[in-house]
Length: 202
Picture 1 (cartoon, rainbow, N blue to C red):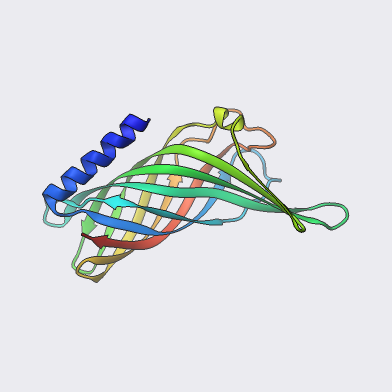
Picture 2: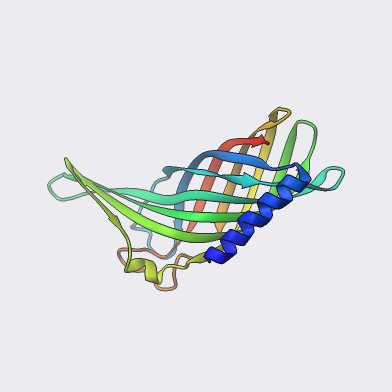
């Protein structure tokens, strides 16, 4: 996977320099999961961030090819209460390298972009909070059962704030589940993310 990511990053940078359409992207993630067969496990959206690089390669007048490479935090959070009324907060943060392969349809003021996305899992951490106690752990054994690469899709809209600055919003969802045999500790799910951020052309 490291070789694939290194090649993708190098290709993106070289192509961007040659095409003079390289941009820096970053902003906020609001992520949650879509579960399979476990309605009792309620989750909420969890904040995170994303950052990376993107290209804009013109094809015809209003259509361009717009691949990206992003570091992206995903996950979910949930809260439970025991019989004594003590509240426990639990959250999972999964760090991914996302490679969206997008088509972009543009006007002078905004654009629509959509396409497939390949996500590579780099690490997963979990956090427990109960009263003043806090516990954080890097999930290792469970990671062996998680998919390391997941196919998904992206759809979004961008608004031109200035000649080199755009405000972008998008929705991304995994087409594949996180593993094949969800457990009580790690439910069977797909990631979903709402992203809001800026793009700055270099």
